[in-house]
Image (tube, rainbow over all chains, first blue to last red; front, top):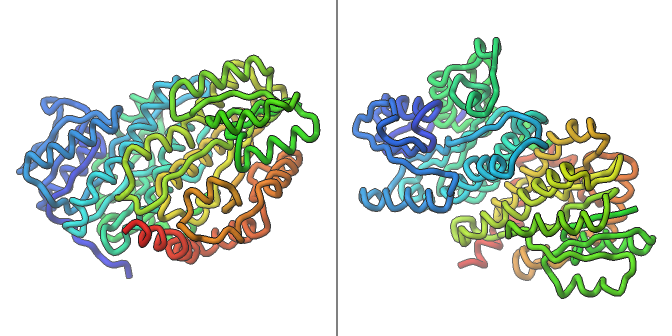
Length: 242
Length: 252
């Protein structure tokens, strides 16, 4: 039986201004956690209520600067411990790889991959002090061929490789986990230039996804995938490249 | 044939370059090591281009050189760096450069070469990944990320390339007997289990000719690739013991 790691204390969420991130913030607050939300949008545009929580703006399209801002923010709040971090900020783009602009490619890679790598490095001391957990949000496309969103899928598969190696390194000090949501009803598809059409009816709601993700974190279902209808299946089988 | 090789001045790239040059094929070698590239100046089949993929100019310089060279029949993306050691102790600045060189550069170069029609008809793009995609790489977390990203991108690119009559291949080598391996492995580790780059090069060339999408050079690599998919946790444990623990104790 998988060990349970109860979710409590202070958590930091990236990509917290909307979508899955906002729902994760809500779900964590429902469990009595203190939430620090980081997002691209100004605080006035953020629509989740802060119950003893905190939200501030940082833009991961300049990863080093954003990570610096986050560290500074934690320091000014005299925060030294974090019980959990969920790296959820993500960007997508739908279309042919040969129509992709350098900027699109750079933005997707910076937000989805480089920022999580840098933030992991910066937040390790905070997590180590609380024996906390570093959680990454991947995607069910990891391991699959994605001709219409190649750089998005690649950034998530790269994140998955990073998480896997980091989990082995930080074993016994900080728990590292990656969870893979499937298509979820958020603004990401529209921003990526994709209209889900009828498929939208079977996409999981962001709220369902958030609860499944937290359940996955608690039960340490590393590599778990959220399938259609919002069910989390733990990845018991090989995570290796195909 | 016309061959374009990034990272052509040393290691696997150099082995591939020498293979093709010995058979009188034209080779464009791209590398940041100007000194090592100069050793190819006497060879009438070799063209060279100094480019550093850690800079934004690197891609543009390479595309300019590729234009002057003419459409390539095969492109080998060998240029790559690493950053090894306990992750939280590594200089954070290394990671962004690593992702730029190992993942973004081959991707941007691919997009540029295809858009500017610098790949010949039925041309092939060969990406050098790593066995770390099968067994993990504790001690080389951002390197592991970059290679998994490249593996994924090549997999997604294949259908789009086929529509243009082009093909791509993914090579997943284990440790090779190269300066790269010596630079990034734990100090004092033996190179006796590392594959000779020219042996790897010959295998890769053959696999490309035989149209194999995934290539594992070396018998040992093939075995680990096979077993590593069935028993990933066992190999992850081995990698942790053999790579991460020595790196960790050396960093103290």
